[in-house]
Length: 450
Image (cartoon, one colour):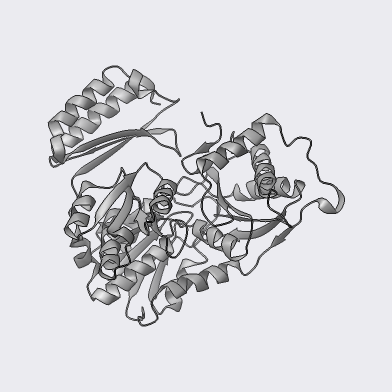
């Protein structure tokens, strides 16, 4: 059983176990201990989003790393993919992101990138937990000149902005585009507006006034209705909504209709297929992606493979099998030919380039796939629930699956980032799947909901 790490690093309410300064310091020590296996002087990049608790955790992590004789490079508020980029471009030994992504401000988290810009595999996360709880590092205390140093890198944002702008084809311009851009009062507020404005777009910004407490609050990728309303009001060409740490993108078309990650993946996959740049003609997504995406990929002459939920598992499958593009319905899109993790800004630039190439509005491009009706219910729990021991639960699922046949799916799984069990039912009959989802959520709720 994992003690600290979930599907996307360590996450929880800030200042309550495991997201305490004490644990953060130990995590810093453990990361430093692991990277010191490489020769030479060592450096670890630390970045964060805009949460109030980021200061506390940043200082604790830095203290832990320096106490093991490793230097720290502090870059301040930066999107998660920006930290991955800076880690590799500065030849650092690791990168750490302090963020709880789409969670509310009172939560925080720690995500770790290796020197190559990829998130740590399960094995290394398990090694970090072992180092912390076994007390193997207790006696390791460098002294005098062996203690690490910390310094700030003031131009990190600028480097990342330049990298992103180079992704957009030079033969195109955004001068005739009006973009509504929602930065969720998160880590992209000082990056995304510059990228799109410098490429020529007229940009109407939302969520660019972080105060430490308003990250993701009724804005950004989790609340695209704000962006959609602004697009309709202003007559913009497209709306782009990022989440708190900038690794996911949700879009709306010029009519204010929200376009999820599945549709954006289909649009980008078709463009890559046309250019013969979709390796093995395969898109990688997760079990949460709509069945309509599989149908669309088949019609295009490609295919889709699924992984468990989490962009890290999408990336691991891409690396293992030699694929180049993948993502999640929630808006994580990974263009592995450009960067090592999901990047909302990069995904937006690739989508805008496709729009320029096709000379079609977003509403037309979004017709590429037809989504099957899909219902998602989140049941908040007070403790871990073994669904095999919920009375009649598995029996009920089997009956429902038989009724849905080949035109539907049921997926029930615990969240890796919140105390929630997610129930997803997909099928052609919307009333039927709603009833099924309600029944399954009710069975779980009787067992252990708040």
